[in-house]
Length: 169
Image 1 (cartoon, rainbow, N blue to C red):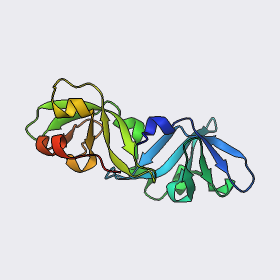
Image 2 (image 1 turned 180 degrees about the horizontal axis):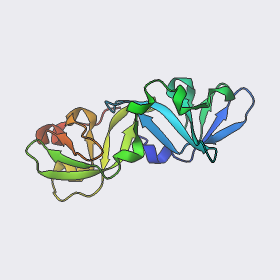
Image 3 (image 1 turned 30 degrees about the vertical axis):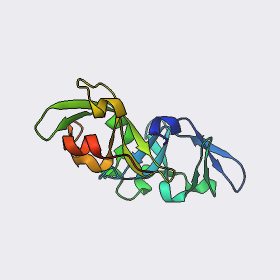
Image 4 (image 1 turned 90 degrees about the vertical axis):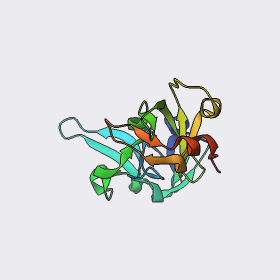
């Protein structure tokens, strides 16, 4: 399954005129970390910097080599994205600590695992102090988490679920 890192730097192309609208810089997730809500293409402007984005529902295809949208006018400033302030940039999850419900450190998030429709399926793992089924799989399914933490707080998982829940397609 693809990861967010695999989508970064892919071009976004308008199918109406074949124009390249930009390259993906990051993907923004809903607050519950279940799906991609917006695509971030970078900033524009010197004094009043704008974040150029595309709502996920305007994307026709999350392709292997490029993402396709119907028209070029789907690129908007982040202020036009409903609930933008609550969205979570995927890059913000990289390095976030994952702990068990008892507080034992399990790993850190390396990347977000997506399906072909850009729904979150789980998280690939970075630094892992422990060994076992999780270390062998190097990933934890989305459904094994009881909390996704915050910028400063760790994600929490039930260890038994983390070890037994497979990342589905």
